[in-house]
Image (tube, rainbow, N blue to C red; front, top):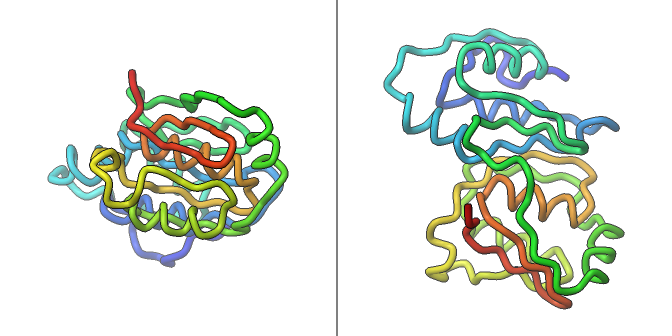
Length: 189
C-alpha cells in the first residue's frame, strides 16, 4: 500500500495521519487502530525529542520504521492492526445486556470507509449516531465524555460491531450494549 505524502519524512507530528491515510481496502487488515498511549507518546511525551526523519514509500515500511525508532508496537488482532505501547489495553471491555443487539451490529455495515485522526468524541458521536441504528451515548457535550482519548483509526468495510469495538479501543473506553443503545464510558482498569 503506497504511503500518501510522497517523499516527505515521517515525524512525530504526522506519523499517525500518514499511516491512517495509507490504509487501503484489502481482505486481511480491515482497520488500523491507534491506541491512546501512542498518540500521547508522539504528540505530548516525546514531542521535544529530535525529529524522526523516517523515509518510507509504503505502509508496511512506515510502520516497521516507526516501531524501530519509537516505543510503538504493532499487533495484528484480526481484523485490526493495533498500534500501541505496552501500557495500552489490547482488548475491549464489554458489558452485554442484549446479545441480540450484538448480532444485529455484526450483520450491518453502515460506514464503508472511516478515517478519524485525532477526532474528538463530539465529532465521532455525531457521525455514529447519525449512521448506526442504536443510539450512541454519552451525549457529545456530556461531562461523561470529557476524558475520552482522541480517536485515531482508519477502516474499510467494517461491520458496525467492528467499528464500535475499534472506537472503544482507540478512545480508551468500555462499551455497554443494550437493546437500543450503545453506551461508551471511561474504561476502568
